[in-house]
Amino acid sequence: MRIVLAAVLRTILTLTVVLGVAVPSASADSRRHGSPTPLVIGHRGASGYLPEHTLESYALAIALGADFIEPDLVSTKDGHLVARHEPNLINTTDVRTRPEFASRRRTAVVDGFEEDGWFASDFTLAEIKTLRAVQAFPDRPQQFNGDFKIPTLEEVIALAKRKTRETGRVIGIYPETKHPTYHRDLGLPLEPRLVHVLRRVGWDRRDAPVFIQSFEQSNLKALRTMTRVRLIQLVDANDVNPDGTLDYTAPFDRPYDWTASGDPRLLARTFAFFATDEGLREVRRYADGIGPWKRYIVSIQARDLDGDGVVGDENGDGVINEADRALLPPTDLVARAHRHGLLVHPYTFRNEGGRLAAGYAGNPVNEYLEFFRLGVDGVFSDFADTAVAARVLFQLEQDPGFARCLTGDDFPDCR
Image (tube, rainbow, N blue to C red):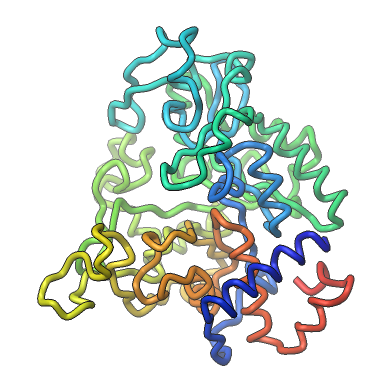
């Protein structure tokens, strides 16, 4: 815990003193539904620092203060659940450098679209264990590529339980069932195996430190009949249009099970349905919360920020990205979801300047603070230390007396 605290305080010093974070007074609307403080979910582990979905990445996220670690789950040929962001292994492992697997490169259809690569369902667990993880983002550290193995769900749970004992704070898991319809059609359904593992480790109960998330709806409805753990409906979109509205281009237009169903009623919907009151009421019947892309809560808009009469590269760095877009006023999604009794865990928070809207002045803490003040119940972060540091600042906003917690052994009880 002292290691975590030291890391948090170092991050606070860097982000507040060096970068100059402003800490305005708290808003009366900053009360959250559920947890007294927002959760920090280590998105794919500490994926901003280490190759994602490895035990080392998860362990680092925990050391940096994450409350939950997030394993995305896909199935091997022999029915084991392993932590990978996608069934296609081409971008997150060293499989393309392995001559023994060269013949397994193929084209597969995932959620209606062809993909070229190597697919987990063509490998046994023993074969998966010979592969090594690589960093999926080219602008992030590459020196650890090839160092870490691909973990099973059981190994991720064992890590969370061990770290719970070692740190004295409860570390949870937040698994995502990746492409459930795709896996079902392969004869490798994810749900029974996931529930079986949770039962075996004693985590098939309402108060277990577990959330299960999915972009598909029928998957979550089936899980509701199989397990008592908390479920989260993820809410996606393809992109943000220049005017700040969300773009719903396939395959990110709707849950793929809706598309596969052929049901005209479902085909008439997009993910935007889940952000309506009708959609929130529907989600409440089978899930405990929503995990919306953060642009449903605070969107961004293309504007002429530098006053040159042209909308484009507003900061003059030679590329056009989120740093060139202005923040729009927040929506009321968080408040409405709470009125329907749902938790809100938006994704994904990242530190890189090109992934931060212009209004945050290049400082990721400013983004976290806006969302914390809007009342979110947790955040998915690639950089858990930054998220935890921002949460400390937010807690100080809410209760200046919280500063006492930073110097005593009761820090875990102050969360």
